[in-house]
Image 1 (cartoon, rainbow, N blue to C red):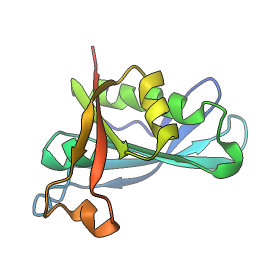
Image 2 (spheres, rainbow, N blue to C red):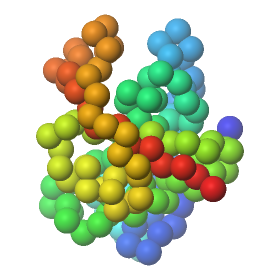
Image 3 (cartoon, rainbow, N blue to C red):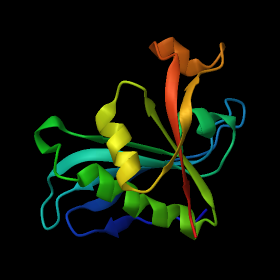
Image 4 (cartoon, rainbow, N blue to C red):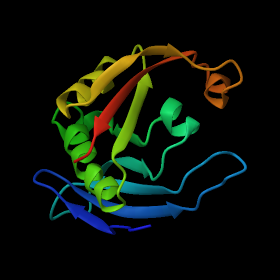
Length: 147
């Protein structure tokens, strides 16, 4: 797997915080966790992650996760973080990336729309899916095709 330790953007940088190995027993693919940092500072304003590979878990849970601390929301940082993460997938020759979010999370849905993700639908999680333990029953599923 090709790993980028840092990815520079215009408004933010991504700094690799942790690299997790795959766990085939649980159906987990390798995962890279990045801090979202303001350039020329050490101020972490959120985090994002890239799950490298595709399987049933990434279809339902997404290849990309992101969270921006409340004080920094509304500045386009999540959109830029997702766009920067797409380069990691391209480097690893992954052509399709899924992003999922709770059906009630309108801000996350807007992030997906702004990065050009195609909405595949709001779908009920499988009955035995582990995300149901967190109280989730239904997710929006988006697809980004990488050239």
